[in-house]
Image 1: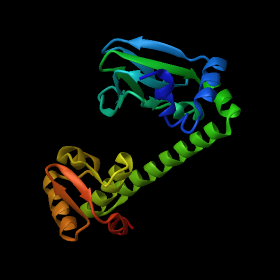
Image 2: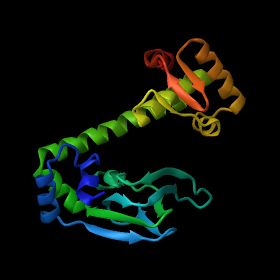
Image 3: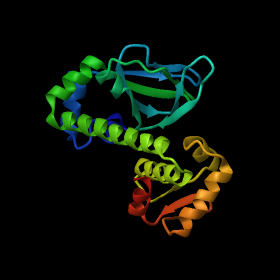
Image 4: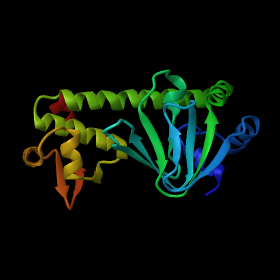
Length: 219
């Protein structure tokens, strides 16, 4: 897949015409760097920049002394770093290549200039940040809920939004960790909500039947 095609599928350049994108790349030339498996791609403690995965695969990892949790996995067409451009707060995260990867980088100054050059790109950034706020609000709802059923409902709504689908994979261990409940409690909550017809769990896959019903449980 060509670089311009990958960028046009990213949140930043969504709905940007190809000739406009080519002009942006000419006016604000990015840097493309190749990384071998295991190499550090990006550190939140370094210079703020936005990266786009052109090929390969990377992991976002929490980087604390006794905690190296994998927070997310990034593949072709995924991006990272936009929050660092618009926030002075540092987060203890690092990104490592888990396959040989090629990553395109724009500096923070380039991103600011690109945003100023296009109202559509500015709108894309605002939409992305608004979605992040919505995502964090759903996370807060998950952790602040009092019952396992409420936390499970909030988590499933977050996963539905993440996958942009009413169908997505289910992992009992991940769900247990995300909602801070034992697996036995998770399965009891699943049985309870399934009995209400809100969703179905079939062959390790969730099928949401009533998203409004799940939302009512979280309120």
